[in-house]
Length: 320
Length: 263
Picture 1 (cartoon, chains in turn blue, purple):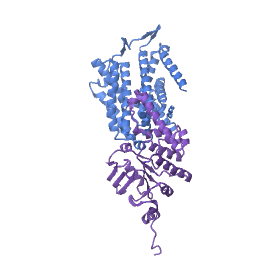
Picture 2 (cartoon, rainbow over the protein chains, first blue to last red; picture 1 turned 30 degrees about the vertical axis):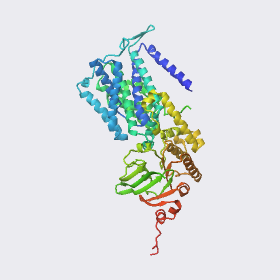
Picture 3 (cartoon, each protein chain N blue to C red; picture 1 turned 90 degrees about the horizontal axis):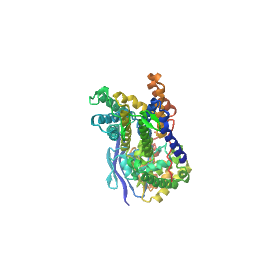
């Protein structure tokens, strides 16, 4: 069983590594893969709250945006390197997650969601109105990362292949997805993951087991925001230009839909949900106007007929 | 005899209604106290006060010399007061073993940092927990221990009760509050429950148990002392035999005999 799983992982990683070679003539496909990877990280982050703890947070776009703007401003004005920016913006986003988490603890259920929606909107409006964030015009000319002298805006030349510049970000993104998966997996199989689940199942019973519900919920807020911040950083340096529109409320809705579709608290399912919901809108470009409708239909259908998602949570098994 | 927990004039008002009204109560180490009374007499509310779910309007809860009033529920649980619930509050979508493991939360200390970076530490913590959890389940039923990876929602009612008691015991409590453990059980299952309670007392000699029950068989069998509540007030206290002959208690349960019926 575990050996099969290891084999599957190896095959999957190899497939990912050769994918840019296969798509070397169509940068657009690689671009979609990068976006799918970025959304997978966002969804994995949200899963700590929505899936594990049942905190319905609609502020993913806010932490995503805070991360993007933090590292964009740092690199444009202070020439901070992308790699340092990655950690810094994650940390800043976490602090904002804490800031959001504290008032949220005074509320519950729908009201908590309303607070997170408000937070997302406030961040969005502030980004438009501040002059130092570039207002509605955003921040252009964000430098690409570079690694050992190789700029990520240059193509990769390898074994006679000429991989488009997007492949740099493809490898970076999937390395980060791997890291996010690792963290998600470790947290799930720990006292922290178990405690989150206890809170999701029955908050009062959880409190009577000695669980500090407030602290564990805020922890979920912070870790989610860190993931968001990191993702935003990659996005900003990948596209090279960000504006408030990239971090509007709809982005949060999309990520919530990904988790609900894929599977609450099932890491694999969440990724499937993210990939699926990144590819489908691209395929259905002609019906762009109906995108919001589609997310609504997916959420309502899932909640009515399969609330646990396509891939439900599995029970933990301990090896003696 | 050391007093484990004592309340002094404990009162809670819901609007104008005193659900628990000036109740003085105490329990000693290794004692089993039965808490009885008609429906709505404030028994469960009393438990909710002791465990910090509700905050009393007035009065004191002394536990090991400390006043528990105002402490949040999780801190009270950490101090060694564990409980079960009247209508069973298991973590239904988790396995039996996970339920028991969560009961050990107060004794474990691995943080999010340990979870991500110190795999060995977390594994060790889980291993200790799993061994202890399985041993606890075995104490109650071999079947439960064997099927510890079953989803709690898939268990029959009687087994759920057992798991809930195991979860409460997993925290090594000094005081255990059982809220109607025999509700919805068959006579055989109730019999088994009483054996279980005796077994727990054998294993954890110092533990104090407060048990709310409607089944007087259970109370007679396990309780050393009985406290009777009616309309939130304590109306009687003493051994089971003494209580069962107390006029006020009989009246609370059966109603007053109408002496002027013919008039």
